[in-house]
Length: 142
Length: 145
Image 1 (tube, each protein chain N blue to C red):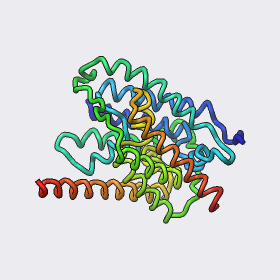
Image 2: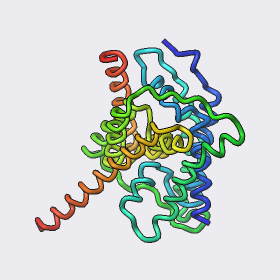
Image 3: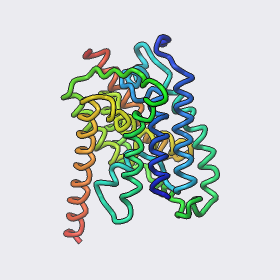
Image 4: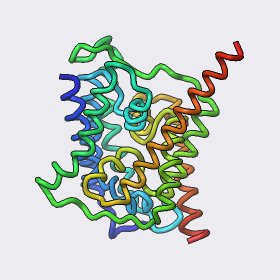
């Protein structure tokens, strides 16, 4: 069954295009992959001369809702889970993205764009695990 | 210049995440809920992003240097191993639990209250656990040799 009331194909597509543009700019201008977990995780293994751009990228991300709210009201956000589950989820996302060398941006957007078999496998794994987790938490336990 | 571009890229990336709905965990979980009331919106995010990025990668693969003068750093790893598979699965469980992946969590820090902050702190702790484990493993290896 499709959730038509919360279905937003146009704004999602437009947002996706912006993400694609950012990825394209970063690749063609800076010669780097816009993979968020790698950019953030690299700060925990600091190498001289390799810190500034990482901090700048993360700062841009953090600043984005402030810039967005100048132009338009921020979309409503709903977080249903408890602080304890958030901590558990955060740990899993942190460990998993570093072991798997990427997240939704690095493997999902960049990897699939360049048809990397490695990224296709990684993306299939995290999508599958996401589907199963939501099935368990929403329909078996919830 | 590279640092300024990194900031601008992060900013545009974040605006895209907000506009697309990725910063709303309820929407992300709605997308992952294929057996319930499924919200397919986020497939459009991936579609739009991959479409544009694929064109850029097509150009990038034939160039040795980026436009600002740095070498083009494309990933070289090719092996599909246990780390990749297990890492992907562990990440997916966390993603399904919270509805946050790393980018949207960072892009929610400035306006989302305490919950995104809790998630981001835990996520950085998870990344730190990985670093410590890696360092121990490589020290162990050196000793063995």
